[in-house]
Length: 354
Image (cartoon, rainbow, N blue to C red; front, side):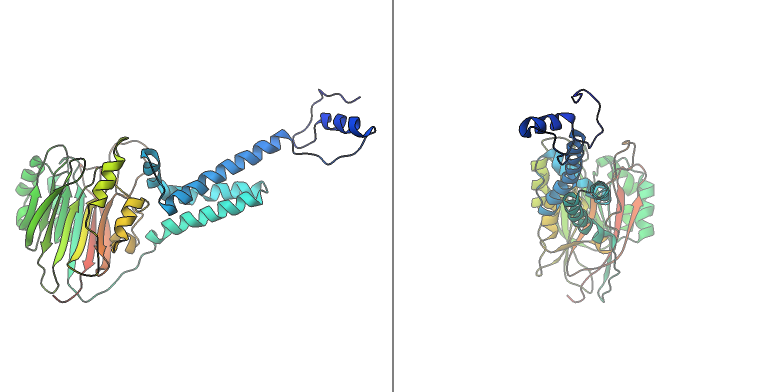
């Protein structure tokens, strides 16, 4: 008689299996071992891990993020992509070849979505060079003298500033920014809702819009010798700081002007509160823009957060988007003392003529 209570090793058939076979055929029969309970647990664990990355890859590639948590989560795709080797390694180590195939496809898909931003190329052109800089000032709390020095050292021709308050407006004027860049269109506002454009070239005619959620945006057309008109807009859609912000965030991105092969050259720059993994920003880029940092191989350099937010992974939320007629030179990222964002400076080579 088999002791049904005796211990057995994982992966071995339970003694009850033999009792059932004996009862059915009338004499002992050797049968193939079934998968032990521990084996089923391992299979389930492997597939759960693999499926997590597969779903992430599908959501990212197909733009399926819906709801606050998925929209925020997809921001971290640059971290999920290298980690995708973990489910692949787990599936291979446990001999689950189907799961390994799925994990391999997910890993390749995520790498294909992320790696091109780190593969740079220096483009050339024969048109005028326009150096633009964008910086979020954290409710105007940045160091105005440090920002002025950054503008001067980078040789920026156009500066777009977000979270531009009346206080920082006075401080930057005192620091000399209005003399360095004589043309400006500013809309100071409290609570981080203001914005400003400073330019070496005339701005005509400046205009303003209000993003859903209350942030202001300023736009104007630059008159630059040697090229046609250049439309520039300082943008700042609402951030995803809490549930319920997804709809106005999407609407803010959707109201930005599309690019195209005709009309003035377009440049959008600012704190988009979105990464290139968000379908809403990719839809805007798809109208004919290119992300200058991604073209230059700097698209994975994070710009936020850079103050005491704890162990929050850093993201690339600040962008310079230029339409496809513009060539991209150097792109650099700089700290802004007193702000939680880093500034992005891009060298844009405009089409000649005009």
